[in-house]
Length: 242
Image 1 (cartoon, helix red, strand yellow):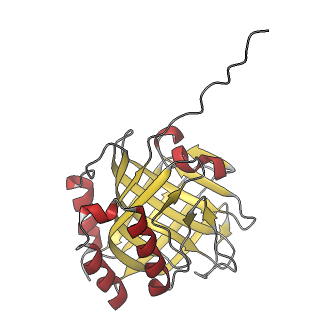
Image 2 (cartoon, one colour):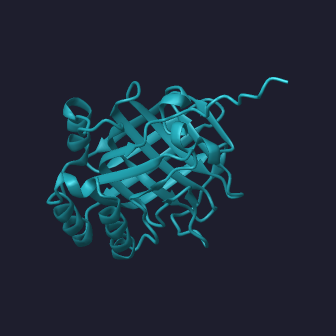
Image 3 (cartoon, helix red, strand yellow):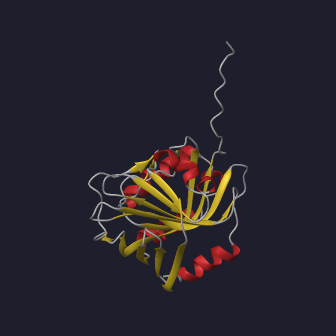
């Protein structure tokens, strides 16, 4: 297995945004990871974005189905920019990602969240096969909604992850285009926050989603990029003069 710590360091130091005029992000993360307690975690680390400074965010679904996004930059230049309408809460914190060896890392948030999330990654024949295939896809393919819909429909069952959507509409009404270029499985993980142990990694009874973005039922770590329609705040309401 490739040294993931070195690969992510390379992304941090030498990564670049894909070409385009829409809003673009490049980096790595865990798409989602469900636990037996009903909690779900996700990680986004985008050192490069076209809308603001690089950032880290942690997505958390509580057992009651409410979603929160913790980010280390203002919400309007990070994930809540696109998913905020589906959240019960978002807040800004210091978030660290620390690698202990070539395939293990820990995510930590202090403050009142007190999150410690340990992740172990692994490559498997299907992740190697799909990584090889994705690296051969031309740029035009990553810009085609029809192609991405077909790719997501194949990838979900092949990875044992339920439904996967690589394109669709976010809760804030922008289209998204996800472009994973390399993938690995989360082989093992533990997490606790708010003084609560999240339990073992386990699929949800019913797969969750935010807008058209389905949360995979299996932990998938990816290196790649994402693009969104340009953010447009709602226009002011203008009333006719009496």
